[in-house]
Length: 393
Image (cartoon, rainbow, N blue to C red; front, side, top):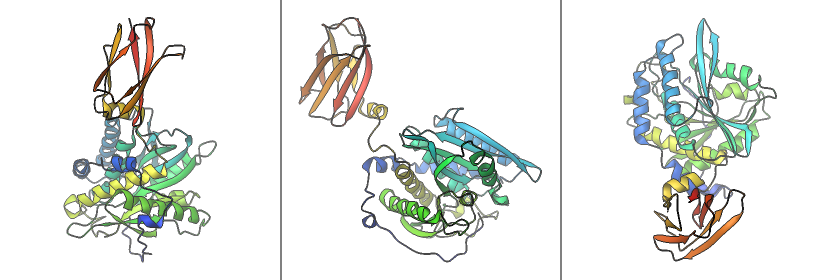
């Protein structure tokens, strides 16, 4: 991104400003899983890939590195799409990873940032945004969100937003009907400045007049993002305006935009000195936490553990399986004063139900009266529900 020299509207928001946007412990728990080691190691790897300009092996190698990262998080080939385009005699690639929403699968929140660089390795501009997006994708992989998410890594930004312009014209507008975008959240240059106190993130809203019809909603979403920053990270939030990065291709198309940019603006981007040594990786880590918390709010993510996550965390066990006359229930890490167990046959009929008050770690369930076959057993407590298949022999 072109270095910003601009007057900023400064607005510090605390959680008291927005009573309707409450702290969600589930979101905090996920944001707190952002890994400092991942941020630092990925910045180091990104820097080592070299100068990522058009027609370079470094750009292609960075694209492949990103593909491998998303696959390591569990994203499938069906979710990972390459948008190839050409300009100035170069063939470049945008990388799009889609996570489907549970309620509005055809309405998207786009999380984007560019992975190309100019002159130098671009570790801050925009390795910092790239590694933040990777952490967002990693941590939301198995979290149910009402809205679908597209994590997009653009190329060609340093040549005038070429990648995002192509994506908007060819994919967003080329979809029939046109792609329905709820919001575009752009992360560009969020690595901070070494040796400075980096405790504030700039949140960017749309103030452009062509068109101006999307400005009010952009401000609303940006205010919500600012609140999320202070709910789910140690950073302060400062309000400014969007400028000269990939979200502007969407803004020109009438989409709603918001974004992150570092408050202490580095002088190193677009130079050979744009290196990790001149950044603040702890700040980058805190930005990623803020971004994860904000995305969970904006996508209306589930506020409680999903069944699979609850199962993995609690480690309740039913054994033996197959069972004969008795089935043992081990509570694992579940701490509850009461739980109910039910068994359902293949026809969906409830065939057994029992409640345990003040249960022991392991309880016995008499299944001797059940016919041989497969059943679904459910354990329900005030902490959540677990369901597993059980065979009675």
